[in-house]
Image 1: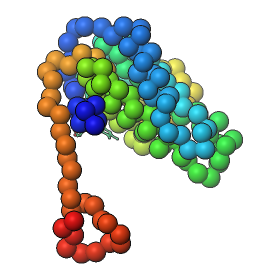
Image 2: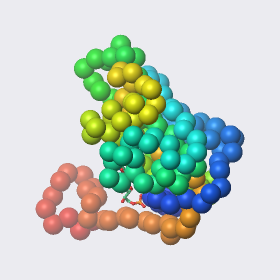
Image 3: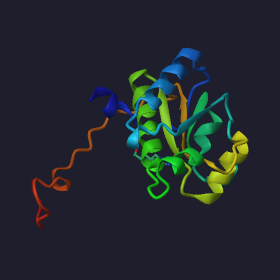
Length: 176
Ligand SMILES: Cc1cc2nc3c(=O)[nH]c(=O)nc-3n(C[C@H](O)[C@H](O)[C@H](O)COP(=O)(O)O)c2cc1C
């Protein structure tokens, strides 16, 4: 729970780089995430250095964290592989989202900062990232994890809200 509550969106980072072993650990965290039918059709693109993914920064109104982030991991699906496994069920969105969250929670556990930068389903952002990564159109980016040492640490947060929980069936006036 400590790492889960410590994961906050960090949009400004210090000049300190990430080590190869830190990046490796974050990749391992991403790849350990749950994956529908265990298809493992996710791809992880590591971009090191500030100002990575410049085309995305241009088209995305809220991707400025990449200007100071020491590294970025873009989580993508290989849709050729996904279609072979199940052409009718695009589980790849959930698969990639699970990997994104694992990376960000692990970053928090390592004392690092991270930000989920949303890409899919915005077509402009998808094309921009494909351009930045030299990726063909069957490799679709779900999101970018901007990573680095936080400029300021945010407080951990527990957002539990009892009225969003239903024990049993839906009912009005939920006070559980
Ligand atoms: C699917 C998704 C897309 C997001 N996209 C962006 C984004 O493009 N830019 C950004 O600054 N934050 C983005 N966020 C971060 C949210 O704004 C953030 O998680 C939310 O405000 C709650 O704050 P917290 O992460 O500190 O708990 C995204 C989060 C998710 C889950």
